[in-house]
Each structure stands twice: as structure tokens, then as C-alpha cells.
Length: 117
Length: 113
Image 1 (cartoon, each protein chain N blue to C red):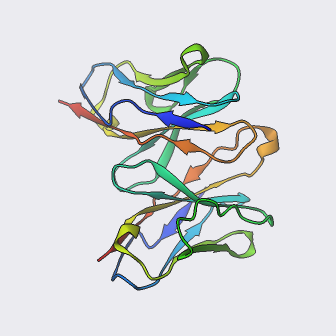
Image 2: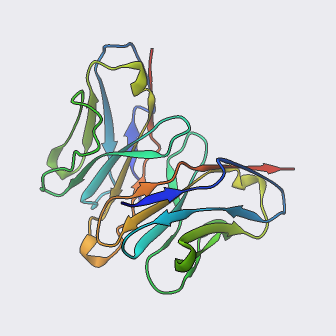
């Protein structure tokens, strides 16, 4: 079946502009995650959605970052007033969300490469 | 707090040689451990995972890893490297019952002809 998809694959923007990044999770997956991958760094957790529960936003680096998930499926990560340090690859992952059944494997999308000039 | 350390940000091996990528973790509870691979301009793909049971875990593409609790390690190995193995490899840890993965900083594997 289809995996996690993300759009756009590349985004170049000017400093100060707002950007929206989209993630389509695997059908039936109730959990959705956003990560940021900066050059030479590991993956930095940003936000986690699980079903209808309040999201875990503990990883968002500033109030310029926000995310929503409509209808329990598609998610949008919005970065307002972009800065050059926001340049990175933004990865989305989804999982079944069945934590109570043990490990809940995350499946990743191809990412969106954001470049802020 | 959990953490993951991957020794060596870059590893080079000759084609046909043993691949050994190191991962050490810290966790206050029995962990779940993962290895992911990332090919250029692609997302992360799960190679293998350890949850419970057998400590030697076999994954895709001939890779395997062994969970050693006494050494808090989960090193990734492959007996014979192939050119197509060139990629970046990430180790991750998750406490059982939680959704948060902590990732290492990655090891870029180069395979020399």
C-alpha cells in the first residue's frame, strides 16, 4: 500500500515568509509525528498527534512553528516568519498508534527540504 | 533521560568487507531499539528493531544487530558490504510503552570499490 507522502519535496523561501508543509500518513495510522533533520544532526522531534488527543508540542522550537491535523489524517506544519536557521529537512512519520500492544513502529515519508534565503 | 550515541559520523569499508556501525544507548527502563537507513533524498526506512526476546535481530538487506544489555549497545553489522549499502544509518531508542524515539546523530557509510 501507499506509504507516507509529503509535499512539496523542496521549498525555497525568503526570510520572513510563511511556509506550509504537508504530510499524508499511511491509511489507518492514528499517530503522526513531525521531525526536523538539520545538516549533521540527528532527528529532532517536533510534535506528535495521536487520534483525538491533545498533541504533544513539546519539541516545537518556537511559537513561529505550529501544526494541525485535520480529520485525523492529513497534517500541516506551518512555519511563520521563516529564519535562515529553519533551513532543514522536515520529516513526517506515522504509526498505528497501538502503544498498548507494545512497540509502535514509525514509518517515514521522504521529507521536505526547506531552504530559507 | 534517554540518549543514543553513534560512534563515528563517517565509516568507510571496502566492498565485501564487514560492516560494523556502533550504537550505545542509555535508558532507565528496558528499551526498544531501532536501526533506520536513509538513502540520499529519501526518508528513513526501518532496517530492524529489537523489542523483547531474542537478542540477535535480523533485518532487511542482510543486516543484523545484537542487543547487549551489559554493554548498553546495539551495534549493526553486515558480513559483506555492497555498494548499494552506501547511505546514512540512524540508531534510535524508545522506552517501552512510549511513542517518543530518541535518535542518534547518524553514521554515513561509504563503500569503496
